[in-house]
Image (cartoon, rainbow over all chains, first blue to last red; front, top):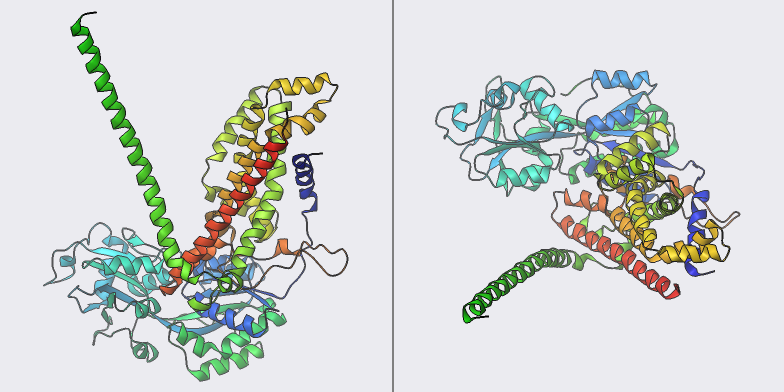
Length: 315
Length: 307
């Protein structure tokens, strides 16, 4: 027989070998927010290096909402969340028999940014609301409509897409209702694109997480935000965030761990490692760590597996 | 013929020659533009990526430190997915093509199938990804792993393979079939020993075009849930103990080269862009290797074909 005929025969036989047995392996699956991803990825990397890859950890990015959808279907062990679980998500999880531990792991702030050659220095929450509320769509199109002394320049807006927790948090904190936002802005899940867009345009305004701002402070500038109750405008510096002064745009980042999964040694070890090193990992990812005491307490409670699920909203 | 006519024809000829020159110049310009773009992109990729490229880059796991990061799980994942894709799409595709071309009656149903195949070959890949997510992951519960990814890409390239394989079978002269029948061969014998081997080079070309497309696909893999951070390898397919072969790797979570590249390009740290460029280089090299293998095999097959 010729080579080609033999090849043809081999290929015909291949699919018969396909079905494999789905063996259990020490696997930890994490998915969710792109904001929390850098912290979890760092934890996964160090953990697997430490354990010489005898335990597998996968980390995906599908947004907080997408992460909870997978979580509540029971597909993953841990979800990265850049906002607390919503009532509806919690209901869906419970309906599927999935209980979880809520572990706050870091503080993050949303920076409102403009280009360096934009003269604006601060902005009030009320003004932000007028820009971003759904009613502003097609109406607030120029800087001049925001107040006296501002130029008649077109307002170019940049923000994250609607599957991201950042979007949900910003709309809840500024507009007052989660996911209520105008739609005529440049939306991208890729924060680099937002940075590039704002940096290139003196009449642009955008918002994204503090970590991206700190890494790109040479390209864009953060505005100080005046709280709705009045008072001084506050810049999003790590100190202001830690002290709780930068309001209402400071948020907590979480991981949610499935209770059933936490009974598995691999998952328990990974979460324990995560909490043990959280302060360094969070700092390295350019977020603001919580107090060392907080992590110690959280770890002790997680070890005892007694953390109440869903203890409430942001600070 | 008087002198006036001569001048007239001469002018005509001149104009047509000028037109010819203009057309050749325009064609050349298009070619140069296309090639320049390609060369520029390739050079830029090489410039950014080559300093990163090395044995370390290929043998390391991904990391949040750009200079320590490697693509071992990504290229192994890509390779594993390709193996599943080839193992599924090639027999199915060639089988379907042989049936449609050699056995199937010409009627309304086969005509419909034909139209749909051509349509499917031009379908955006994300559609296959979402369909596979619905069918393989949610309906059949196969999980988000190498097996489902391979099957999805197999579906994606199946129409390409069928269409080109049919073209190849059509180019085999009927005299070959008739000669085989005249010697007492059954249709199956004629197919197996003569028609399919004769069409072999063409079929192979289709397979390679399909595989080369599959290896660069990102969208269906992301839809299916190729995860961004994987720093382990699937189980080895060869075992120390009986039965020596294991298929556990099929159910392993995976990442692939395009997914890893995508992840790196979205990072804030610009050092990762060099990594992405280097990974792109490896991807191009893998695609070229597949093509090279195909050309070599085709060459061998052509030498074997004697009729």
